[in-house]
Amino acid sequence: MNKGIGVAGVTGRMGRLLAEEVVAAGAKFAGGSARDPASGVAFSSTEALIAGADLLIDFTHAATVQQHAAWVQAAGCAWVLGTTGLSAADEAAVARAAQSVAVVYAPNFSPGVTLAIALAERMAAALPAEGYDAEIVEMHHRQKVDAPSGTAIGLGRAVAKGRGVRLEDVIESGRDGHTGARKTGAIGFAALRGGQVVGEHTLIFAAGTEHITLTHRAFDRRAFAAGAVRAALWAMARPPGLYSMMDVLGMG
Image 1 (cartoon, one colour):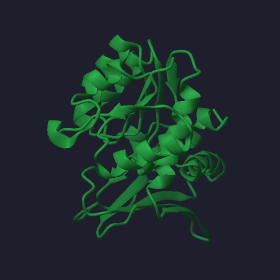
Image 2: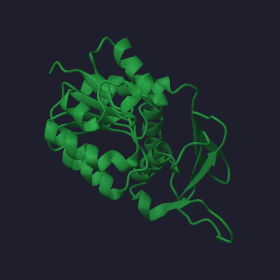
Image 3: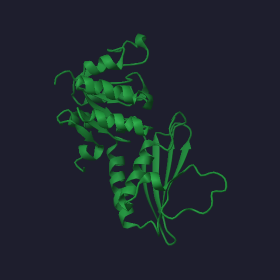
């Protein structure tokens, strides 16, 4: 494996940081792809980039996930996927690719967020749903297209796992109008959008006698980029499988 690490969407805000972090880590940069063929990137298509790389770092768009999954599988190219807003069909395509190549898929590649998700599960297991209402509040920049954020969903899944339930069965998102009283055991979500907030997430466990909060604030997207490159270097030495940032940090 000596082709190096490729970055999909390398001319974007996140793509540029990823390319810088690959070089800063001393890894070989295989190049990047971009929508505009005139942008001067090494590869005009992601399919060509995948064929010329050992691993693809991909923070592009949910609409590309199924196609990218097929391409990495066919090329035997490992994949670090940080795209959020995936559908069930998208996640199934990721799982199929992981049967052939190493895939690290995470809602957030910040080590701090990864630790917060781990803590969320432990807190949920210790704080029963009958006495502690779980609410997740997140805020992002005004350009973000999906809500709740992938990180918020990741926190919600951790709470659900800690309580032994499926998030899909207890989620309450975007309350509006006359909703009635809060259901016991529900996991609530509120999404705020505005300005250029990189990412803020707060998990609240609210009881009648106390509130416990767990908050993570990101001030620079470079935290995500550095974490993704750390995951890429880790994944290049791993057999096929579907991994998470927990695995990268030795917590899986």
